[in-house]
Image (cartoon, rainbow, N blue to C red; front, side, top):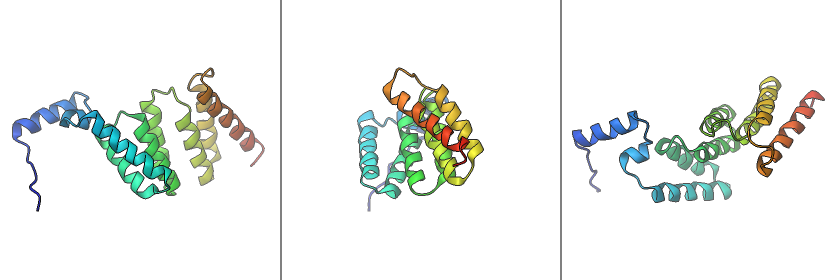
Length: 160
């Protein structure tokens, strides 16, 4: 049986003070960035191998440890989308949008696709419109998402 380390009251106070001042849980708990990145690497590998269930668990943990990292929310959202949890995916894409400071069109496009899959063209249209406004058209990746959003808007307007 392993012995579990306990926090002293002073350590707990320091941890809570750190979180309340805006630190991530990982930073407040002293978890080093290499450990977090190793977790991200594992989650990403699980996702790429099609193990969306375990990848979702890993990305969820990463979101708890560092709620400010857009990559973790995108990973969690993608897993949830692949697992058919569309409402939960939309929520996670929303968090990715916020933590990306509305600069990345990708989360809005993916959330719009979730809404389309649910049959909600009104919310899908709103997200595709928003995606076109986010990001930098000179950025090739952003432009690709802008083009995809425009294509989806065309499909919706044609009644598809």
